[in-house]
Length: 312
Ligand SMILES: [Zn+2]
Image (cartoon, rainbow, N blue to C red; front, side, top):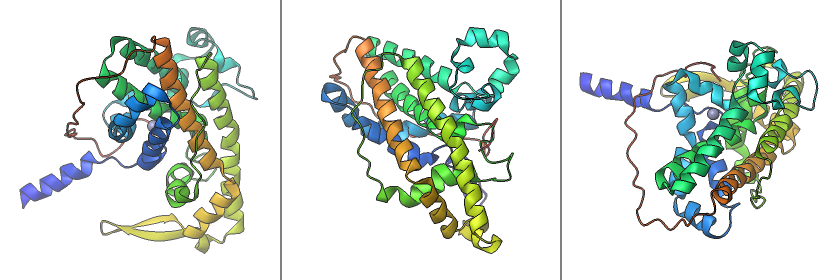
């Protein structure tokens, strides 16, 4: 009996709860990104679809193991920019360290810089024709790029904690997406070569940040339209009752967002595919006809129950 209980405990620890786009959203974004590619590159990624999908969430799993990993998933634009467009943050990181306190820079997140760094690592992996590294980095880039397409990953009020809107993070990127994705038309634009990768990333961050105001405003609007009793319902999971947003709340919110989640998901896929494509072109378009097959190993890591650092 003790052995069974211990096993159940470990299984519980080994399955981190969905974060950011939610595990579902991240896997979907990585899969859609494959369909933005063409030719040999498409053939390579398509033959590794399972890997790219299942490892789309590795970056979030690392947040249960490594404290500093969390900073790679977001950027709090509002600490640095009083109005749009983003200009201060686009300065090289070295200059920002002169202007701002290093601990503020760290806690506000390194999302865009981390992504640029990962692009260089992917380019290197293509040059070395290191299949495993190409796949791991591609899956991670997919994760980080789609995180930066989530409006609340660019705002310090990331879970509505400053405006009495707690739970908005998961409502936008997990609950609503999971409920409505089957109604989306998920045809994505073909990937393109990015001549200015840094500007491309900051442009996406700027879009997300502008949208973050709408994400919060629409939620406030739902709250004014529904009575307290209509806002929440209770759900039973593993014998425990959880308070959650009611179906009515989710449906009103989705309607008010007017296609925003669908658009950000498709934009993520295009951006991910374009970074993969750019890294491959910049590496000299190496031949990707690998002889060996990548075999999946079972993840036996024991994760902590809680994320380290910022909780979403
Ligand atoms: Zn993330």
